[in-house]
Image (cartoon, rainbow, N blue to C red):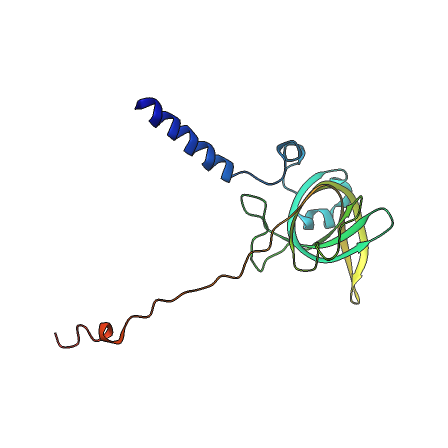
Length: 169
């Protein structure tokens, strides 16, 4: 009986720990430098050259070239798994270069993504007429988060007699 309880305990603990892991492989996570913000890179790009970062966000645009894909991402704070949180705060935008083809139908605008990579400097582009400095990341690992289904709410409606149950007391 004791062996069965011990085995059940370790199995439960293993399942709980497996549920708390990140989707980015550990070897990639171990190479990521201390947290670097987009604003720090924009202000002092030379100080963070070749730093390894892990940033999450929402895809704004994707452009495919002959041998690589450029993704424009709006950074969002990430949760314990590395998934972007659904909040209204952001440090800014960044560009990520993926060596290879990413299908724009799959990696489409509005999708959540987590990117690990090495900072390659900055790119000065514009958003409308506003000049913007984008940190530029060479992707070593990318994770596209699955779409979450719309939540359905089922309300239980009490029968009419239940609402007036205590009326006469």
